[in-house]
Image (tube, rainbow, N blue to C red; front, side, top):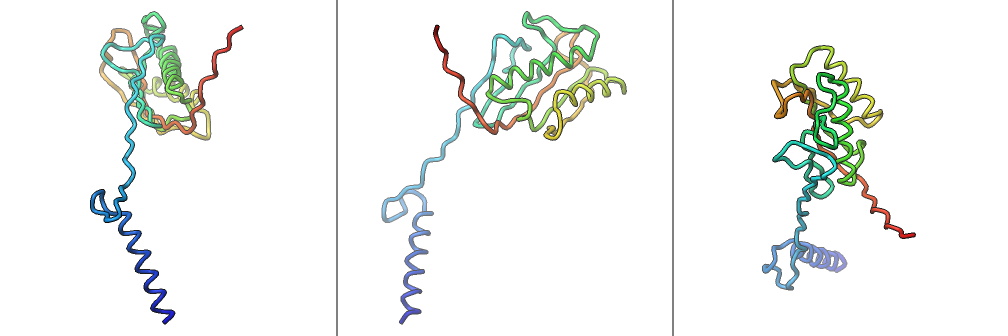
Amino acid sequence: MIVGNRFAILVATLGTVAGACMPAGRDPRGFAPPPQLVPEPVYINPGMVPGLDGFSHAVKVGPNVYLSGEVALDSLGRVVGVNDLRLQIDQAFANLERVLRLARGTPSDLVRVTIFVVHPTTEDYRLVHEAATQFFPPPKRPAVTLVGIESLPMPGLLVAIDGQALIRAEFPEKPQTRP
């Protein structure tokens, strides 16, 4: 008798679990699964960080941020460090960080970075590695790929840096206080 009661409880429990997993409209009790929430993409195009025309600086979908190739342009849209790869790398990383911070992230949130260099030499790769090591201190460095390319869309540019970030924690902006 006890075994029979346990079996009946098990069947009743399994029936409830199976019913909860059925698609909406098929559950005789009228329960429907919760709706799937798909976050809307947020396009990040700050006016203070100039970029190449026709591209968004970044797109954020939930905690994921997809960063376009940031280049060595100053706040007026002029190329920084013409013929100086190290200055351009530093400016491109600075622009990448500004955009990432506007997406509510930090460089430590980057999980993948691709650095594109125009006509790279062995010395250029050393410069890129040195700059990346300073920008991404240990122990949490993203996966980095260095790619040699023929050119970039604007004359004088030697480097572009793109990436993907996973924002692990967001902090709300501080409220503005008025004196």
